[in-house]
Image 1 (cartoon, rainbow, N blue to C red):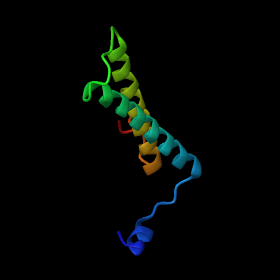
Image 2: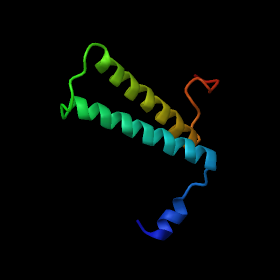
Image 3: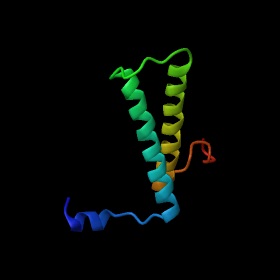
Image 4: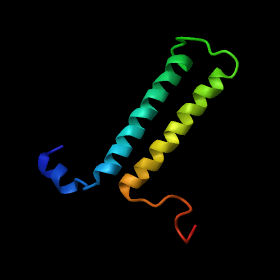
Length: 84
């Protein structure tokens, strides 16, 4: 991508939104890597409800990431619109 293109389409976002987005993204990626290590690579065998907990942690982290992404892009949350 050229510098001119990047400059033309660069968004100005607040430091708070940027930090929230990057933190949520990094947390989700960690949880996803943990899930992949168990589910795809078989690094360990979850016992009892451990697998459910692993899935739930990844799902919650993904939801937080999605919320932060929508805020970063300035897209209202579902239910925030009077038209929903």
